[in-house]
Length: 176
Image 1 (tube, helix red, strand yellow):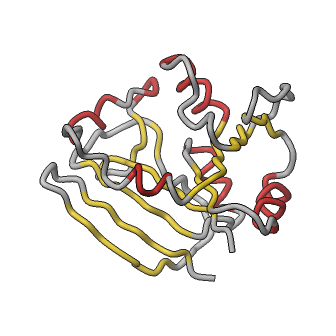
Image 2 (image 1 turned 180 degrees about the horizontal axis):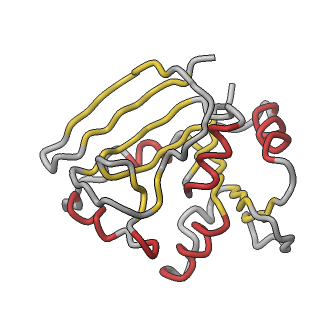
């Protein structure tokens, strides 16, 4: 069965970005030759979900969308025509998740952020797994990973890994 998996990094105090979408704090764990399992994880997914604000931010910084080789759904409120494998989806999130999970072909579904999409997936209880990389820094303000008011969801720890950079990665299954 296809799973919806959140793979994301945040500061120790729970922020995925500093004010003004500043991601510079992620650089403190950058080490040559170390991708913290990201490449191996990408081999397990063929579909990407990303919020429109995150997509727009990425496209301001690169020429080609990094996941252009996979079917990507940009979750948006505005209708836009597809661009290759990139589909701008403005329907009900639950309907999209149900459709993707019902497809017999394919591997897992990667949620690549941002905060609004992550919290909508948590609100609807659509996530199956969470792979969370904790960056050893307190940033104090910015975009929180987990918003207030989410429904309680129990998690089962599947794996932990620590790295010399101080990054700690937690892998959870969301219990149903």
